[in-house]
Image (cartoon, rainbow, N blue to C red; front, side, top):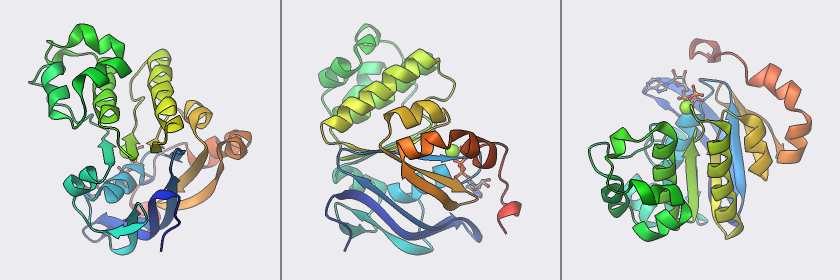
Length: 238
Ligand SMILES: Nc1ncnc2c1ncn2[C@@H]1O[C@H](COP(=O)(O)OP(=O)(O)OP(=O)(O)O)[C@@H](O)[C@H]1O
Ligand SMILES: [Mg+2]
């Protein structure tokens, strides 16, 4: 049995692509109302971890628990049980307008605009024409409007100005205060640790460090020089 307060949990999860192992023996929990950061260099296995938790990759070992119950559901069914996944490539329909994108979400479009007011002026614009920051606002607002229990968020800040990142993280933080559990993959480690309660550091597919955000913030220099610089290739992990 998974812990009662964990809304999402991975136990001994190993996952990869075909014969290539990427993430190995991962133990991770996200509690209700908790923001958890998942850190690691390029290629460390962060996106792979989120995809496994979302039900997009078959596990080669271990198990995922949603609301304390082991699940092998597809993403579609996990979404119906309160999981929301905002992928790196944003997951919006570029040919559709902002409003059409919001209507395709599980939440109320008006609620999404309330969460991210700048979207109000953009409702009739095609999503593909939005700036990077506006697209991120759209995908995050759509995800949050559905009032999920747990949000998996991949590289929200990619290519965005610090001020926009701050605004997006602020929304996430407010939602967490209302009970949302969040697993946040983030390149901007300092910003991530500012909103996170806890964090895990992945290196070559394994958790090499974990703790409260303030513990990890104190060791930021060490983390940045040892675990966050450079690129980790699949060859190195063999
Ligand atoms: N579809 C795939 N088939 C084979 N290998 C893959 C596939 N997707 C990713 N990988 C490999 O798995 C490893 C982990 O990739 P992953 O995308 O999880 O890293 P990441 O931590 O998200 O990196 P980044 O910070 O660059 O987004 C990398 O070595 C990558 O080349
Ligand atoms: Mg990634």
